[in-house]
Amino acid sequence: MDGQASFIDMPLEPFVPDAEISITAAEKMVSIMPGAQTGVWSYDGQLLSGSRGTVQAVPGSYLLPIILARSGIQLRIYFHNNLAEDSVIHPHIKLLPSSCRR
Image (tube, rainbow, N blue to C red; front, side, top):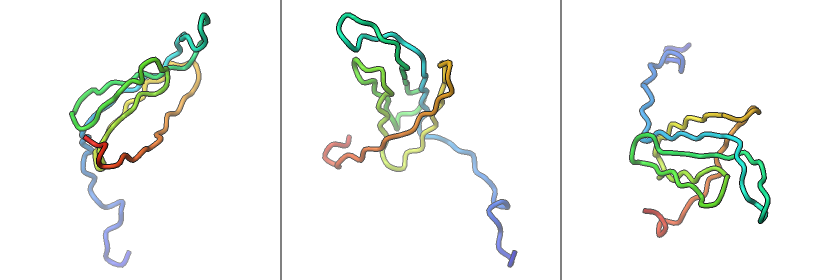
């Protein structure tokens, strides 16, 4: 290869996250309509280590928690699927104006 190192030849540095987060998917019964319980797939999250990110549950919601991290923060997310079905999670990214950032 014309004397240049290839990507494969480059040494890999270990990934050291700024924060580690755990997200667990499980079935849960919740009250969506008054007086009735409904089975849903629920997602709970928690910050395992680091202080460069936060995990906020949405009160009264069974949806994924809100994960907040500044640009450039490296996160490791552990996903525990306790559902009977295969499951995938994916982010929806919302950029906040600087006046809203902490």
